[in-house]
Length: 359
Image 1 (spheres, helix red, strand yellow):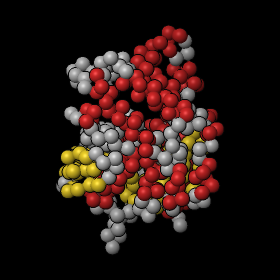
Image 2 (cartoon, one colour):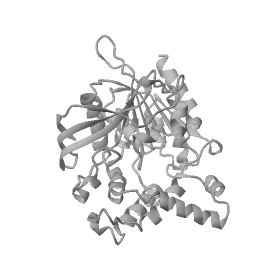
Image 3 (cartoon, rainbow, N blue to C red):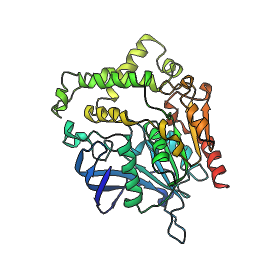
Image 4 (cartoon, one colour):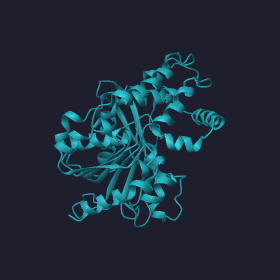
């Protein structure tokens, strides 16, 4: 992505408040605006806004190099606020925890097409550029370097889609970070069952009778697609055990279906469609050898989106000796949704960072 004419940054006090955190560690929101952005496929956008939040204070050495910056990347359907959910924030950002907001400067952007960042539903619809993961990563890099004036990251950590982008960060900017932690993500192109469930949702959106090739009335958006997408997403991201616990009877399962659909009613069809399609350019496998930073890949044994039996992690293990692949057992996890249960994976993150920082 080619980026030109960066705008000034302006801060907005966030409405999110973290109980028990000092004022200095509370999140601040801001926008980074780029004019005349060019994407990898040649498409352009006159104005591209990347919304983000920060926690903590940036520390630099006497030469002006950043010492404590951490980049956190969210997953599909997410925004920066996902990291502030109690299941994550209560175990990760507090005093003495792995990413203590009093110690680190945490940068959490909304990806292109998500949250407060520029997205298709802002008005362009299907005329919006068909961005990919490479565009996401390059835009994040410009935010960090040109928007925040940060020349080095202590850590890049991403979840699911953000985990895949973390692998790409290691390849595209290998000297930019001290460490990488891709979570719930494999260093291989998406295929098989992982691609099938995505394509089911893509087709459900595109074939919705009210979608009209993306030119739908915002006051009457397509809604039938949600009846397929919402429960399928729950099935793929959860586990049979968790779903059985939530819905042990036929009536309870039907009620769960209805609640899942209701919770997705406000999901924008065109934004989700673009997000799902944006993974088309993701394939870190050919350039894994470019990664030089130590890495910890955290995955879950009962993750239906990234099943370990496919052995997609093996190339990274064999080619990148400075890395560790951690597979948390099914008894301790909740499938792909374990990403939202930091009590499960935070100890491993803390141990990894302690090892990195002791060297």
